[in-house]
Length: 249
Image 1 (cartoon, rainbow, N blue to C red):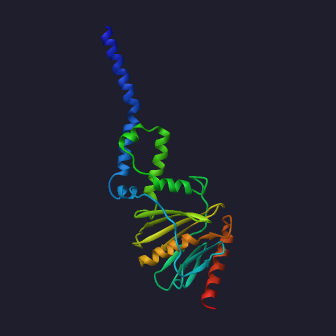
Image 2: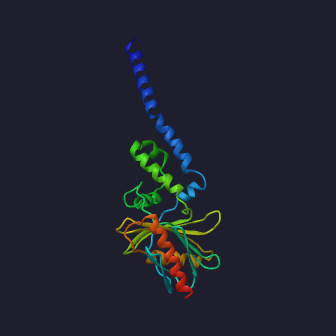
Image 3: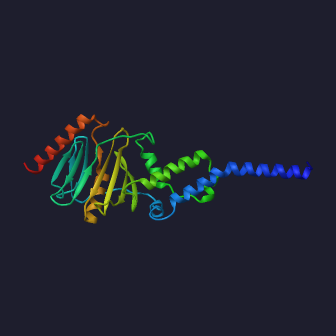
């Protein structure tokens, strides 16, 4: 074989090996573009969380769950129902604050997933060239965060985050099939391993925002760890009974 043919063969072989090694990256780019383009993905991914300082309503009353305390606008809510380990604060109409079971999950980050959730909500789409050139480890981390942002419920309109002397949290604005306007709060204790999610469904925009802001500004856990389920059942029941006795002495 002549030298020129040998060099051509080697060049073709190197090119083939290079293309073969880069083929997964081309597939990566295609999959990524399919994920982040189009509506509603592009509009949801365009949201950039803003740091806020939540504030209390002018007149408030304190709600005690037996594991936390927080303020809400006064003279709005008349009932606190225990739904097993959950609580529902509401009036006779359609003003509601749903408190889910306290929890502290660490599968994504050791601080109750707070860092992971916040990083995910800040994540922005990359160009095809950036995706192509990223290392596998960097791409894997980015993919997890960007897919988490797309999958985050209630975060299709706006997102804020805050920190007070007692807690830190994320406020998400969105909708569901049943409620066109929902404010969702996830609140973490600044020191201890306990957190909770609250869902505000009030049809009046100003009152809905005022309620969420008051909760965020005042929320304080009075227990330092998530109690056992049996204890949570008892605490929720007792909180409901105490609220009823306070409203209807």
